[in-house]
Image 1 (cartoon, helix red, strand yellow):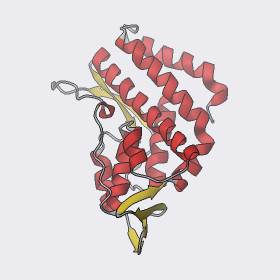
Image 2 (cartoon, helix red, strand yellow):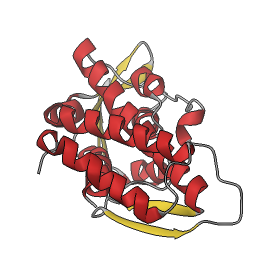
Image 3 (cartoon, rainbow, N blue to C red):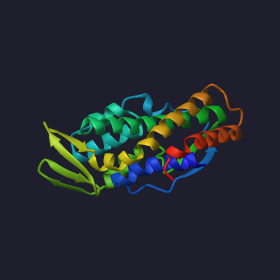
Length: 215
């Protein structure tokens, strides 16, 4: 379904433009959940902030975005008011995706897997560790394009490379955040008796927002 393609693209934007090597093509595949209780949403608790090194700052930033924890992401980066608001939108979209995945598992007893969407924030730790690092005094580059600057003894990400890319996808970010949050609420309320009903609801939402979603 197209929504899952868009969710995968959102994740791929985060990973690919950060220079992570593990990004894959988006795809959806429900699989049987384990017998263990479902883990809480990654957005449920604050992420740790480590600004001691360029890589640590990048990891804190990416993990904050992935978990839907805007405050952690913002604490890990520099940027103007416009960039910070855009980062809040990105984090809000990721938080909505996590809520949707949790609601799907609770309702249907299966895990909604979106290829290209990281399965855990640990994925970022592995990828960031593999990134190249070049440093010149208080300036550094992690991966091919993430700039990091040291101020007051702390390293912080310069988000320009990411926000410049995301700025052209604001309608997509808003659509994902609103649409997936609504679907998550409906799943929690028990609205959909079957996965087929849920799939039809997704298609109906996409038809309504089609003009706002890039092709």
